[in-house]
Amino acid sequence: MNALTNYLSAGLLGFGLLLKSPDLLRHRHDPYLRSLCTVLGLAGLCFVLGAPPTIGAVNRISGIPNLAAPVTYVAITAYSAASQVLVVRWRGGPGVRRTTRRWVLAYACVVTGIVTMFALGDAPVERRTDLDTYYANTPYIREMILLYLLAHLTAVAVTTVSSLRWARRVDGWLRAGLVTLGIGTLCGAGYSVIKLVAVAARWGGLDWSALDRSVSPAAAGLGALVTVIGILIPLAGPRLTRWRQARRTYRRLEPLERELDDLLVRRALRLPRPRWASPVTRLVWRQTSIHNALSHLDAYVDRELYDETLREALRATGDPRRAAARAWATVIAAAVREASETVAAEPVAAGSVVAGSVVAGPLVAGSVVAGPAAAESGAAAGPVAEDRFTGPLSDRFTGPLSDPRADRFTDPLSDRLADPFPDPFADRFPDRFPDRAPDPDALVDIADALADVLATAAPPHGADGPQPVPAARGSRV
Image (tube, rainbow, N blue to C red):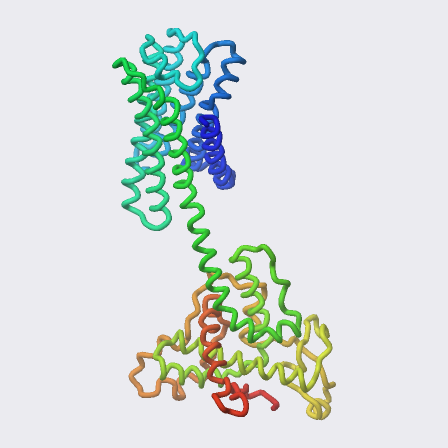
C-alpha cells in the first residue's frame, strides 16, 4: 500500500509538472516558473525514492544497506530548499537574490550534515518502511533523521503561512489556489510531525512505528494531492470560466444565426461545424458564420430604417446600447427578408465571379438592377459589374472574425442623449448609421433583441397571417 501511495503521489506531481512545462518552455528565463517546476519535480522524486520497491533497488544495486535513506533524505531536503526559494520568489521585493542564496546555503549545510551523519553512523540492518523509528536511538543516524525532518517541517510551515497570508490579498481563482496550496502543505507538514512523534515515542521506550509505516506516508500522499490541486486551480480555473462564458454566448447567438441560416446555406457562407471542439472554438465558428452573413447582406441594409428604429427605441428605453441592438436587429431582419425575396424573383447561379469577387445578387455599380430596368440601362440582367460589398459592413469583415479585443461596441448617439432640446435627432445628425459593423460583443445584444423583434412580428392569436417585419426601402416588393 505504501508503494502504491508513493507512486500515485509521484504521478500526480508529475502531471502538474507536465501541465506547467509548456509555460516553462516559452518562458524558460522566468525564475518563478523555474522554481515552481523544480518544486514539483523534486516532490515527485521524493515519493519515487521513498517507495519500498525503490528503496530495495537502491540498496541492492549499491550494495550498501540503507543507502536509499540518505538519498531520499537529500531529495527531501532539496525539495524543502526549492520550496523556500519559491516562497521568496512569491514575496518578491528587494533582496530576493540575497535571501534565496541564504536559504540555498542553509539547506546545502543540511545536506552535508545528512551525508556526514550517515557516513559516521552504523545501520547494518535494511529497513524499508520504518528506518526512522528503528534507528531512532542509534548515534549519528538519529541526528541524520532529525536534520531532514526539521528541515522539511520548516519548509512546509513557511510555505503554508506564506500561501494563506498571500491569499488574503487576492481574490478569484488565485485565492482559491493559494488556500488549497496552503492546506496541501499543511497536510505535508503532518508527515514530519507524525514521524517526529514516532521517534520521540521510541526515545521514551514506546513502539509507535505504525505511525512511521502507515500514517506518515498517507499524510504525505494527501498533501501531494491537495498541493497539486492548489497549483492547478489558477491554471485551469480561468480556462473553465472562459469555456462557461463561451458556452453561454454561443447559446445566446443562436436566434441570430437561425435567422441567417437560409442565407448561410444558400450562399455556402458557413464552414462545417467543428466536432469535438472546445466551447471557445464553437463560439468562434458561430460568430464567423454570422459575420459572413452580415457582410453578404450589406447591400440590403436600410440606413433610414436603422435611424427610425433607433429613435423609437431610445425614446422607449432610454438605453443607447439596447436601442442600437434593436435597430440592428430590425435592419437585419428586413435585409434577410429582402435578400430572400430577391433570390426568389431572380435566381442567381452560385459562384458567379465578376471582377475577382463572388457576386451573390443582381448588382450594377452597387445598385439593384432587375428585369426591364436592366435592359433600359443597357446592362445585362443578372450578376454583373463591380464588387458587391461597398457599405459599412463589408470593410469590417476582411477576415473570418474581427479581433474580440477591439474597441467595444458603442452607439454613436450615446453622447447626445443629454441634449436639452426636445428632439435631439431632428435635422442635427442626418447620417447616424454606424460606420462599422457590430463587434462580437454587440452581436449578443443584437441576438437578444432579434428574438423580441421576431416575436413582435409573429402573428397574434387568431390572426390570419404573420405580421411583416419592416421591409428595407430598397426592396422591390
